[in-house]
Amino acid sequence: MSAADAYHEEEALGKAYDARLMKRLLTYIRPYRKWVALAVVLLLITSSFQIALAFLTQVAIDDYITPGKLSGLFTMAMIYLGVIVVGFFASYAQLYITAWLGQKVQHDIRMQVFSHLQRLHLGYFDKNPVGRLVTRVTSDVNVLNEMFSSGVVTVIGDIFMLALIIGALLYYNWKLALITFIVVPLLVGATFLFRARVRDVYRLVRLKLARLNAFVQEHITGIKVVQLFVKEKRTFEQFDEINRDLRGAHFRSIYYYAVFFPTVEVIGALSLALLLYYGGFQIEAGLLTFGELVAFIQLVERFYRPIRDLSEKYNILQASMASSERIFRLLDTPPAFDGPKEDVATGEFKGRIEFENVWFAYNENEWVLKDVSFTVEPGEKVAIVGATGAGKTSLMSLLYRFYDYQKGSIRIDGVDIKNWPVDRLRSHLALVLQDVYLFSGDYAANVRLRNETITDDQVRTALSRVGFDRFLTEAPDGIHTRVRERGATLSTGQKQLLSFARSLAHNPDILILDEATSSVDTETELLIQSALDELLKGRTSIVIAHRLSTIEKADKIIVLHHGQLREMGKHHELLQQRGIYYRLYQMQYKKQAAPPTG
Image (tube, rainbow, N blue to C red; front, side, top):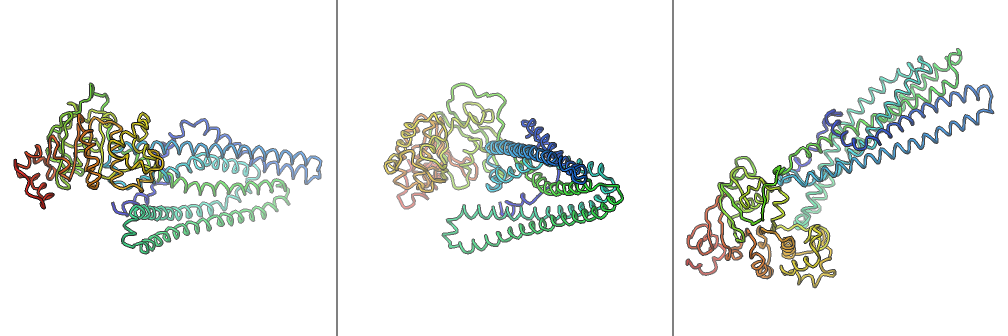
């Protein structure tokens, strides 16, 4: 997948509000609906207290300050202070609850996304870069947290605040209220213009950020190649260019915010000037008191706050709709295999494997395997050989149900693997790959893989049986020696020995070795070969190998060529046929004497 494809999905923003997505998002609040209701009630209380403060100001001026009744002013001040204190605690509780709610919902969504990712088939990961999937679990979920913690509930509060203020303004003096509303079209126009500009800038920021993430991920992953070909300077220049583009996009966003908020202040000042001008005449005419004008001005100042907040909430809502759409697209991707409704694989597991007329393609009609049929008996050691691209690894991917075949049947103990629960099927299998993946932790953790039933003694036994014990003597903490990310401090041979021990500790019924010794040096190969000969006894095993010397003792050798099963038999039988296997053998031993034919 190209870099452009990797970040293209991040560019789309979608609708500012999508009722279908919002309805689905609100389902995550359902378990916490009582807390949401409490937060809304606290918001209503806070909003009401804001109106009460303006009313108390008007009473203090008209009833106490103007008439000169200063004796009651202290009481009014205490009431005013009491409203502020109660409002403070109500606001504190509301903010705490909404932040707590955002974190809870974020946790729930992130767990659901990660759980779903683990159940997806490998074909999905073939088409979606790691950086994009990490973004789903991290950045996109964080955006939704912002919506739940400072969006949904606070929008309700802002709308309620606006309604209360408009009602109070009309109550105090409907003529002054109409004068105030004269500037509202200017405010609405500025808000819509700001919204349109910020939408475009936000899309640009997302695009530039996705480019930066893709570039960083690609070049950190390939840092060895960058250093090997002395491309650090050129890579830094590319990074600098992409980073400057991102900075420029952020500067544009800052510019629009820097223009919008002062614009709102100017519009508010214009409204205030009209109020002072007209209100002065109203006071002189005896139609308005000085306290009412002061209270009116306080309400007008508060009138613009929720409008500014709603403009910001629009951006949060915009980002949330985009992120939720991407998250739900991931969650709506069907899992690998739902498995049968009932477990039809009953009885003792024997490990008889049957491939019958199997056809498989990663892409439609581009067949990787064509009409493949063979049987692996319990306890039998079967080797699969063939040139690169012959379909060897694909066979094992089908057996493990990393992918599903399109035609034919694969059965274990007479039951089609599609009728096996995936977890139960895989519990009987162990796969050792050529490219070993090790997790951060220690040797023991990488062998047991969180299976706490495997004791330290069993870990040591498994490591000893594959010859890894000689490396433990040099390890400072034995099996508890730390392993760095991806096993950076271990050689390729040591990693593969650990993967052998990992499989053996889990004691599988069927052991699959996918070119597991192809990258091992001769000394290490000899070290593990004797252990493998012993460990494979009585265990169904399938060995995929390029080195034919490792499979000469196999009970059966299957030769694949261009996705078809072309030859099958024992080592000496295939040499006698002088076919594909014979040519492969000749190629590997061309410097030696011709192999015997009988």
